[in-house]
Amino acid sequence: MSSHSAPVPLTLAADGPLAGSTAVPGDKSISHRSLMLGALAVGETRVTGLLEGEDVLATAAAMRAMGADVVREAAGSWSIHGVGVGGLLQPETALDMGNSGTSTRLLMGLVASHPITATFIGDASLSKRPMGRVIEPLGLMGARFAASPGGRLPLTMTGLCPAVPLEYRLPVASAQVKSAILLAGLNTPGETTVIEPIATRDHSERMLAGFGAAIRVEPGDDGARRITITGEATLRPQTITVPGDPSSAAFPLVAALIVPGSAITIANVGINPTRAGLIGVLQAMGADITLANRRDVGGEPVADLIVRASALTGIEVPPEVAPSMIDEYPILFVAAACAQGTTVMRGLDELRVKESDRIAVMAAGLTACGVTVEELPDGLIVHGRDAIPGGATVAAHLDHRIAMSFAILGLITRAPVTIDDARPIATSFPNFVTMMLALGARQIP
Ligand code: S3P
Image (tube, rainbow, N blue to C red; front, side, top):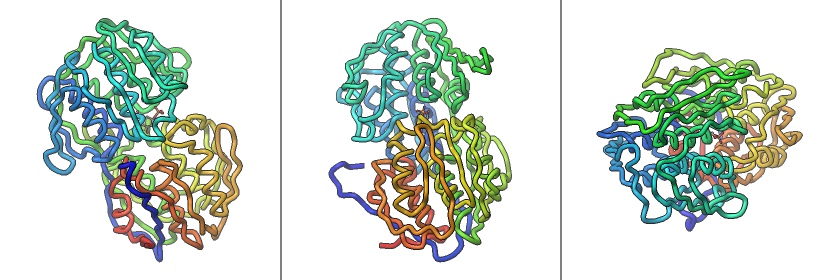
């Protein structure tokens, strides 16, 4: 997103049911990792279904800047000729990570065990986000950092080669921190182990194994997972089909549940259990969601979701499910606003350090739309109601998922809801508006 262009407001409405069949863009997490691992393999990796959102394009540009040959051949079809593990080159200019925390933290892991210096910069949202969570373990492996106050971007780091192998217990449930350490471990002699007390998305583990790295996952104490990678690996190039992103599918999914009379199909959605928590939570609230045509696509479970409008009921959402749906809380808050009764969601401290403080920003927007909420330090209580007034302009705070969540809420409010700036949606879901219009929503100019 260009920081020089003007904000682009967005208002969606629905005059009747949503209907039809759709598909969402490729999974963002898998797209980032496809480019990074392809850039470290020797030979040509081919990717189809790659998400061409701004976050993933930032990763592509960074891998090019560090020596890989990354080429877009057709929409979603990319070819990557890697440099081999250990072969990354020093970038000549700062790596612009835009809005993308995943690009930043995973690439910091890669740089940590290469003998190069790199500077990371990002937009106003990314420049507020904590990087100490990766600086600490990567520093223990030998990387050196000069960060902005509070361990933030802009940040310059120098890797160490050979780096020092590490055994590290994650203090926060974060797939980004886990992945940064495993990626650093790829070019580190010996074994690097990450212990995660609570399982987070496991795309890195699956894909590293697919690329031929020696990686094993063992049970640790108290249900923890011990993930060990053997370094100085050689990665074999892969052919990857990226499944549809469940975090993007969540928006049309909730839209179809709350717009009366709707019935839609969302094809080819990833249902990896470390990502699919939202489906079970919505079903527990009374959602009519069928998982049809279950299959495996490139080592990931996938299904077509058949969704029908449903009367939802508030529930207490178990905090343990949070890591498996961490990006889906903003749209779950919207579903909860439309449910009968109260929905209690806790264990969400991490939401405060996403692209925005998603608890505070959602609470403010829902309140402005006439929904009663109670903000907790680590969660939100939403009192569902009929005939939500709406009629507000909501600030998205450079956060794509906030923008899309309020665009969906506006489908059922009595008066329209306007998002002050929809440009961040392009980071993860460039065709969001087009897809919602094709399902029957209407854009108010
Ligand atoms: C991601 C991990 C999650 C998630 C983000 C993508 C990943 O972040 O919120 O959108 O691809 O590893 P955390 O690791 O900070 O929980």
